[in-house]
Image (cartoon, rainbow, N blue to C red; front, side, top):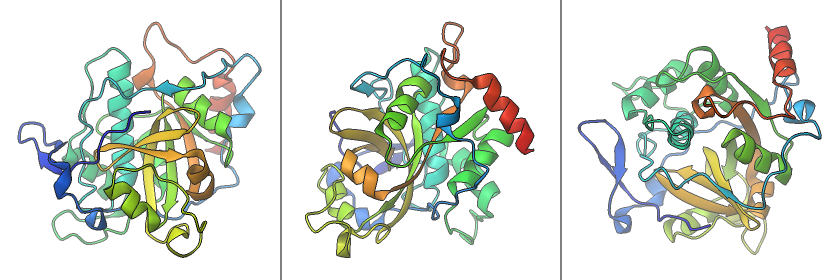
Length: 280
């Protein structure tokens, strides 16, 4: 997979969307993270519960990135709103690939969602402590982000490559959380894939030593996955994902469903919504 260079941000005055500029000026040490440690609810609905043998087999590689030419920073270089920025990037990718006019959430809309979930005050800067992915997903489902609601979300098995591939291929993306190591800073700065350092997950390679980060997966191949972060595409190896990913979700959304595309055969959507109703 070709990975676009991570680039700094300029804001479009008309749309409020942060765009990209000269890649030589960015300092990854000043970028913000903002994902809390995963909170796993024992009642969480699991993707494995709704898959049948009729579900289409995902191809060896799949890429949803070609129709989005500028992802936007969504203020994640200023505040720890990555959990909401990841949602905004999925909205962009979904609508772009659905054959519609791409919906591009503004920085203000993403920050508003972050404020609603966490109590962050954009005037004073108070309460910029990041967010829990499940809280953002629930807000996205119940209230909506940038005017877009999701129908439901299901948790994936840790380290299950097929689940990630199913999520990207069938549901056009995967909302994940990673506990980034300090070693990923230099890899990001040098436009290299995120990979496990030679010394393994200790020292600068220790999970979470940089911090928690929320990102959407928008492509995969035999070598790894590609995510959107800080306004650009970033690849990671499968081994990196296995070591540092601490949560992952597939999402049902009307944004990627069109008149010609419905929930795939082999996925028990009716049972999913029945189970979701039982949790209320």
